[in-house]
Image 1 (cartoon, helix red, strand yellow):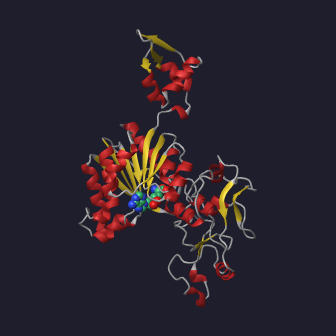
Image 2: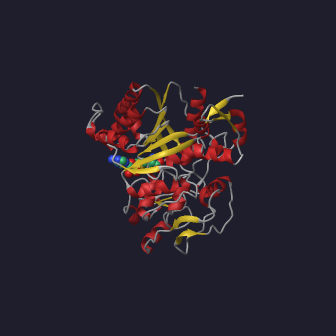
Image 3: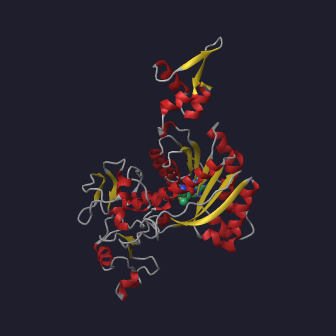
Length: 411
Ligand SMILES: C[S@@+](CC[C@H](N)C(=O)[O-])C[C@H]1O[C@@H](n2cnc3c(N)ncnc32)[C@H](O)[C@@H]1O
């Protein structure tokens, strides 16, 4: 028989010692008392038997989400059942409000993550242990600072992430960014990022991942860096595409949502239609009402122009006189219901519903980003679109998290 202390039991199960004391008092678990003070010792095997395979009692890896936005990246990690987000940090309050609503166990902290602010932040957070740090630091600074000057203050947000990792020493980190960073200045910036984290003792690799390869109804590409200490990491293999499951299309993703042809919808409304496929089943698993499904109130002229664009086409299909109104490559694009969507943006209003003459609602955009329907967006509609468009698709993040768990297991 292996006997363990109250503290060990609480750590293994990720439970407060008082809960274990109460369980013992109520006879749910047994312990022996030893020594003059009558300290508790629990039988390890019978404890595990009591909690069985219940995922909620499994010890979870702790996660800090830097530049968290609404928290799409950390949501995907949590979906594995093996990670618990403890802090989400961002300097934008509306996103933090959404983050806190959807990560009830985590604390949202409003902080500006420049390098010079990191030590004070860590002090503010108090005592904590972090296993994984994730985040997508904005990288506008790189192109301005030039190829060689990595330490330029304009890169300060990247340096902030680096400083946080240096000071907290997690087992692993994940950085997400736009794919253009991979080729910026012929790859110099990417190599420099790898070098800086390697100096901290991490084995770092990077890859551009395509979200639709992982069951996200969207052809969004993102550059991902993963660093692990004392182990190796392999990027997840695609789950969808040729010779695999079929990619999820726009129609698969939203066809159960109420049509808004003749009304604007509401912040909260009933579904009205049944689930039609596995993806919709996933979205609606924990939700019995629909949130954030409100159509834009386009003027008649705009609606008439949208009506002229066939499914899957763009401004090139418009009559000559209208083409010049917005003539860059994504302008006036109607989704193709038979394919994954193009990259969901932060609400520029250039993409339209595959059947209806309007931009997608926040909920439709969130579906195309693979957010489940119980993930609710707060603040103004403009801010909601921005939070959705900024996010890492949770189902993509989940696959990265599963590969990280493999890497931890191997170690
Ligand atoms: C691409 S978004 C992150 C999205 C997030 N990873 C997700 O999956 O939902 C980048 C975030 O960085 C935040 N940000 C920008 N400058 C910042 C700063 N100086 N300090 C903290 N956060 C900042 C923005 O408010 C934005 O929410």
